[in-house]
Length: 273
Length: 273
Image (cartoon, rainbow over all chains, first blue to last red):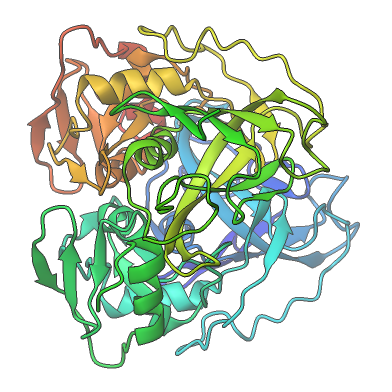
């Protein structure tokens, strides 16, 4: 089985953890996973040249940036504490938390990924049933009242990654407010910003009409209430400079007037429409 | 005792929780604290006009944005479960997690702050000894090997807020890379960005020579390795566009060559100097 399954130009869908890279470390709920490439003789286990941000490695970085989970499959050659005795086993969804570059034990640079188990507090050594039907689907409905869940990395809101992905894809990561595109070594970066925040006390919905594709700067300004959207759902007002601009809106993306009004009152502290 | 103690134009130093606002909610380790103002007759308990981002309210927002903790003092008139029977008691440091606007029970808008206890996993109903000497000091030394601590809101790195504040103050929140200043209804916003990341696997130092004052956009580009700093410690290279620019550096802020080299190799994946 190949190490990283992915869609060319897209995100990674699965990784196989089976002891193919001696730099892998398996902690069960947390895996330090080595990228692919750099072995002149595939399967030799010897890193001879630097790995690069291509193919599966690029796809895993895309997964990290989009917040898209990957399926982890463990093989019998992997760490004895966490791997099946024979064959391959599906072990559920993991978040790609971060990646970095490191010297391999052989010398050349390798890319390493930190993968964190998304379901369950601790690895249970069992295959987990996960409905994958929702992932990689189009036009996600999202979740009108998302719950807080406990993840290994702490408590956080269970967001639907498809909602974010849909909005970011629609705008190709171009900020709907200032128009900037942040380019990275792989794909561009943007954030799915909830107009009415998800967490307490705002309890907004995790749905497309409550989400904008923003750069981190405009996301902060929105969350701090430095900017708000007027009731025409298109005029963006900066309450510090008193300047206004127009929100970029594409066909199919209708934002929710109630969320906009909530944000204007409760986050920007502005009561006029 | 006054509700919010603060330095004019600066951060809040302490809040008194003593039942003065009927909209306050005390959960012990978590307090929903109501801002000041809006009562035409002070102490009447009746909110008659909207509160505003002035005086203590502005100072608490500054504390939130700078990550500066506030001292919580509980008085005997407060919630019976968590307050002293008589007089006032110092209950330790709390983080100002967020603020928002809400209609008070009387109608006009109030500002509410979520305060989270920083020491101890749960409120223990006892006064806690905390060395306040380090806070509000100048030229902080920081921490060369910061530890992970458990906070009520989850596990995170124990950063020294003075290190961040010192760097952000030096540049007056102007991004050292792109020069933008993000203006908010209170003070400007910037982020203290570690060149060599604090968390695993990078284990960088929480000290001034490892920190830059950046806008969120440039912070992301730095953390993604889209940009790196050359060994001259001043040339910033964007590896996507191949453009270079100069880092703004002020007297007294010397950045660490080893951290810069670490970032270039392990985060940007660039081995040439």
